[in-house]
Length: 346
Ligand code: FE2
Image (cartoon, rainbow, N blue to C red; front, side):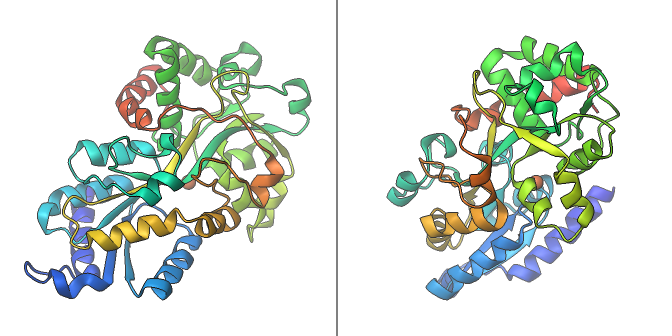
C-alpha cells in the first residue's frame, strides 16, 4: 500500500517537475534533458550546472530509489518525460534494459572514452563512474592478512568478526553475482553461508556504519565501497573521521579474479523526447575533465580505459580490478538474491 501511494506521489511530482511535453511539442523541448536518477551526490548538480552553462541545455532531475524509478518508467511508458535513466549499480541498468525501458545508442566518443567492460555490449547503457568494493579491517589486521580475499571471509578464523550490511543492498548483490559469474552458484552458496555464519551481528546500516562498528569494536572485517572513504574523510561528523583512522583497506582478489567493481551508469530512455540532448549529456559525463570532477569530489574511479586515480583514490594506490563485463552483475542478480535468502543473510 505504502509503495503504491509513494508511486502515485512520484508520478505526480515527476509529471509536474519535468513538465512533460504533449505529443507534437518535441521541437519546443530541445533545450532540456530530463533525468531519472538514483544518484544522490552533491557533485552531480555541480556537473549538471557546468553542462547547462556550456550547452544551454537545462538538466531536470528527479531522484528516487532504483525500484521506484524503474516502476515509474514502466507505468509512464511512452508518456514518460524521462530522457536518461541513471543508476548506481549495473544490475539496475540491466533490469532497465531487460524491461525494454532503454534504447541503444552508438557514439564514437562514448566508445572511445569508456572501457569496454563498463558499457553495455549493445549500447543500452554506459558507465559514468566506477566503484570498487574493498575490505576494511581493524587497524593492525592487515599485517596478518595483507592479501585478504573475498573467499577468505568464509574462513573459520573470522567467526564472530564480520560486519555486513543487509543483502538487500545492491552492492552486496552485485558482489555475489560476480562470485556466481566466476565460480558458479554452488560455490557462491557455500561462500555466502559461511560468511553469514561468521557475522558479528545481524546485518544493519550502510557501508559507513560498518566502518563505525569496526571502530566501536563490534567486529573486525567489513566490505565497503571505496567512495565512502572520501565521504568519511570529508565528513562534518568527527565520529566518521575518527572511525576512518581505526581501519585499513585491502584490495581483495589481487591473486584471484581481482577486486570487484561496479558502476554508476546511464542509459537513454526508450521514449526519450530529447534523445540528442541525452546523448550529449552522456558524452559530457564521460569527458576527461568531468571524470576528474567525479574522482576529486566523490572519490569515484574514472570509467576510462586507464584508471587514473586522483585525490584520496590516488593514496589508496592502483589495483587489479575484476575484468568481468558488468552486464553479468545484472544477469546473475536474481540468483544472488535467491542465495542470500536461502542462507539467511538478512
Ligand atoms: Fe552508495
